[in-house]
Length: 92
Image (cartoon, rainbow, N blue to C red; front, side, top):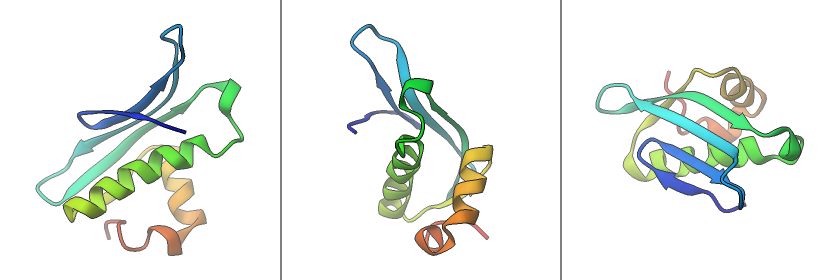
């Protein structure tokens, strides 16, 4: 799925401007971000969209040399469920 990027946010709207998916992260010092919010509309749940959103943040933070502190419940669970996938970017 293609997401749009805005400062500290990746998102997707449908053709009627309804928010379908969103991830928000906030700076936490110079070398970290807090992944604070993940939302996926019920019409898209179960399709891996939330993980795709998180992966957008992961790719950006890897490129910037920053670490991620998962805060929202989805991100916390995802990072625990797939530690090998996120070990290079999770803040200790």
